[in-house]
Amino acid sequence: MQITDFNIHYFSLKGKNAIVTGGNTGLGQAFSLALAKAGANIFMPSIEADNPEFNGLIEAEGSKAVYMFADLTKEGTPKQIVEKCVQELGTVDILVNCAGICLCEEFENFGRNLWDKMVDINLTAAFEMSHEVAPVMIKQGGGKIINICSLFAFLGCQLSPAYVATKHGLAGLTKACCDELGRYNIQANGIAPGYFKTKAAEYSANDPVRSKAIVDHTPADRWGEVHDLMGATVFLASKASDFVNGHILAVDGGYLVR
Image (cartoon, rainbow, N blue to C red; front, top):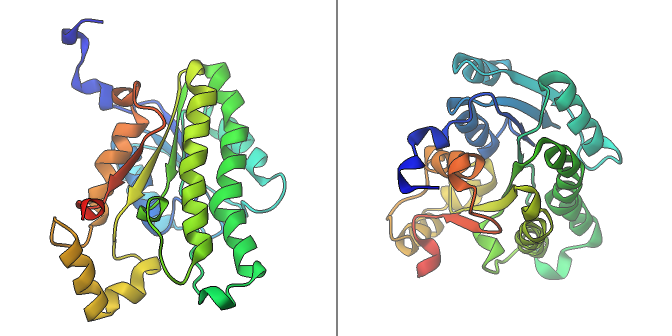
């Protein structure tokens, strides 16, 4: 390849089909809409109810929006999701493992019930989705897997040992998928969002002292806005990132450098 072969169309996702787990709620909406704006059709398996208003935003970009009610922790569901996406859209070119939860409790009171719930959705579901989509992508000649990690894939935190453990595990899964699937032209990468004012961060966002501490620790001097995640999503889903594999991209305003 010559340097002149690169062009802006490498970022286009026209004609691609993406599964975004939990893609119709929270930060999942940012990932879904970013991919739709770049041209991809969006298949959204979610335990949350269908969101016609959000579907309309995707369709306004000229992309298809397909919703499927799905409990990712139920045995057999990931396989059904992949099969349904192929049936509805024809291919699965992009998988974004976004669905996740954060349950908080003091360490000494953090029981196995909380641990199991978080491991099931944050880590096991991402593995099973990746496991089910891999044969489809291999047959197609390539694909993209994007795991939504967290700053806590690099750090510790209080009140949720399972969140930290599952996000570290998700980063490890990303690297394992890279090592196993890279030879098939499948790139597996992660996005580690910093502090964004989502439902999951309500406690910190609504506490003036905690919120200020977060901003003071962030070189960008602010909380993240959802649009800050969208460019990274398109990059990792597109041809432009074909030689980026096994990387966890922090979108954190520089939080990790301090």
